[in-house]
Length: 206
Image 1 (tube, rainbow, N blue to C red):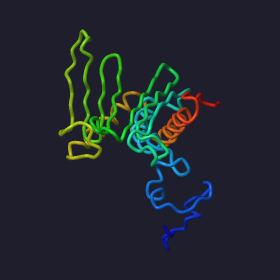
Image 2 (spheres, rainbow, N blue to C red; image 1 turned 135 degrees about the vertical axis):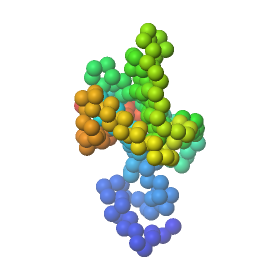
Image 3 (cartoon, one colour; image 1 turned 90 degrees about the horizontal axis):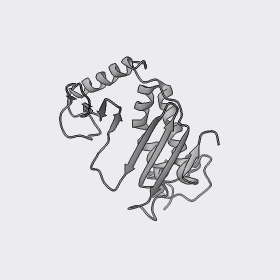
Image 4 (cartoon, one colour; image 1 turned 30 degrees about the vertical axis):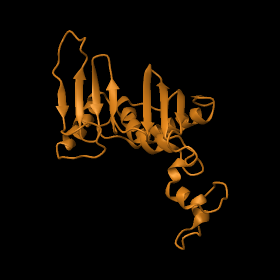
């Protein structure tokens, strides 16, 4: 296929290896190592930054990652199904699972503590106490509709965002997520990919 007239293909390549124009790679650049870094940098960063914000986390100390091309074998280079475990100082562990093969959970995150679990998605907020607790706090659910929706579906979703901010403030974090949370989330994604493309384990600074 010829290069579209309005496309500067060399500029798009940047410092990537010189190669002929490929329309599919151009439009789906996220899934090719020359241009993108797959699910971890495309999707995980939009959730893990919240954890970095709430817990004031910097980069992980190490990552363990596995992945596979289940439905995209022979088409994509980056895996369409991937799991990574990130280990941080202070006994904090973050596990991410992403796949294009099944959408049951949608897009969401859970913060699991000793007393309760905090569930967050784009339009829903749930605080679910641990059943083993002697004191039984009330379960709190904000937002309507099914779990895992990736976009707000009602004005009540804004209350979920405000509630997350108030939790951050109570935890000693800034009321709004700082730019540093996004930067550190990106470093976590790159460490996860380093593990996947290497021996399966990557250690920060090595």
